[in-house]
Length: 192
Length: 65
Image (cartoon, rainbow over the protein chains, first blue to last red):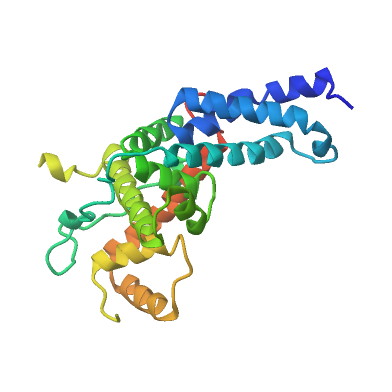
């Protein structure tokens, strides 16, 4: 049975959501456009398999995640320059003294729950994500946005689990610091 | 292993979000966090970060909505 116009319209209605979802991971509007297009086509072709499922958005997001991982796989097969993001693993050493103690002790954040109620906070978070180096951001978003396990991320990015943990650690430390300074009002150690 | 530095602890807190820590690692981590407010703050902040990114991805709060 061909999909009804109604089904087609419902799927179209999810396009903006899907585009945003894809763009967060891929950081490229054209690439996001492509995977969403593939997803919508696959959804139309597979309309029969949706029958009986309750949530269209969840179903479409599931298809989209696969398309995103395919796109990442394709792009990581392209020959790239030597990986400077994995070189010189001096992660945030400057934050600690020679014995591994904090030079500047992290303070608690005031009302983080309140931040989650504010659009402006999410704009800051997106800004912080955009500031991450490409591969670091990619690994982090595969973990936290796509919800992949480390093993799957290593495989798709062709890195060892140790490198993967290093990238995730760097992403979290960088984002923590970025939010601390840009939202929670900590002093920027670089500008002192 | 029992006496971890703050630097080691931040790595382990991060890895704890990605893999199941070993028994010894967990004990050493908990011991450190119990007496180190700075690292405890970082642990909370990393947990908060996970939740914030999840909500960003759920698209209810993004600037485009």
